[in-house]
Length: 257
Image (cartoon, rainbow, N blue to C red):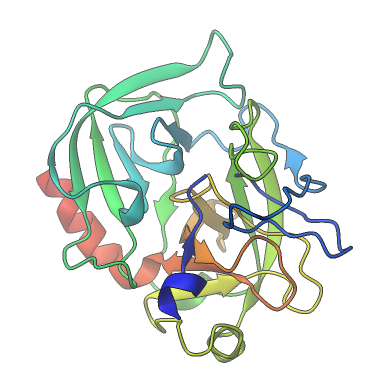
């Protein structure tokens, strides 16, 4: 049951699926559904966004550290195999900055259920604003923004331009019902349009941030794109790592990278 429901969002984009029986799902027999929602982000709108070469997203926790999902990386240690692209919404822009990784730290104790966060140390800083993370649950409500460069069709190539979408908070109790108790309360946070579906993060957006404005009007990260059943299906909200739960662990790990 857990293997079926925990469809990790590792390879498509911010999806708004036509509500006509079509859905994006990780089955080889599925008919790819077109992306009909999400809008293109403006240059500089989310300067902390990073695209990772393994097909995931991330955000600049520090100018030389990317916060992403644990399921996007293969354990911890020295690693120069990942390329991070930042500073642009257009991955083919001449102004895009690309930097190699030097180290990876996967969340201690990560086993595929909860704790879905990781840090990637970069060889050089990306000179862009960073995204602060929530340290309390105060911002785990309201309407959030998700963004990514995932594919425009199931199994397709990644998008060239960064897309964005808005998704509302979904309570733990509603999310637990949707996923037959598979949610890990306190470690995972849900968002989406449960009744009608239609807007969601999707494969290829894994590791990217879910964020909103704080009381000072600044962006603050409350979630990390993690998993869900298909993409934008009615009845199945997106599931995100609850960043505030791991804020102190993330800070400690970052200081030791």
